[in-house]
Image (cartoon, rainbow, N blue to C red; front, side):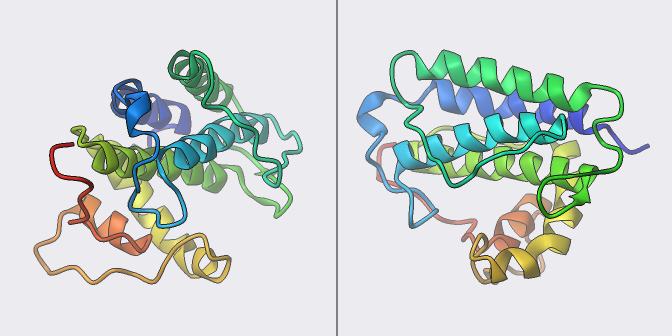
Length: 192
């Protein structure tokens, strides 16, 4: 049985939040697997995604062009609260039905996009800061085919890099990372 986006996001959040809460302010300048982002910039991006995809679940307009500075004050607690709101927004009956967003994509596809962002960026942040991160297997099972289907368009939009080559023995999550253009073996600074 296909899991709801709300249930999948709850599972993904349970794995992502410990990574985010464990980031020390001294790690904010570290590079990440996303070449254009350091840890602070990636956190700001992920905050924006989490906030905007709450609105997309409710069929509201969003502005991805405006990037506020979210990593101030008690940002870790705010990220937890915003992520809880994201789960709630996608748990509302009907959130996965119809279309949403300026591109008029199927709502479930949009939900899988934020699920992919939360999961893959949690890995990015974990790699950059030396934290442990193991994604929820059910999330990987659902998000893998969705991201693979979106990959050509995401590459055209410069959201994904070119696929990273992985061997036949790659795990399902390593294949997810590779389809987004990430090297599953990427590691940050020695000593975390």
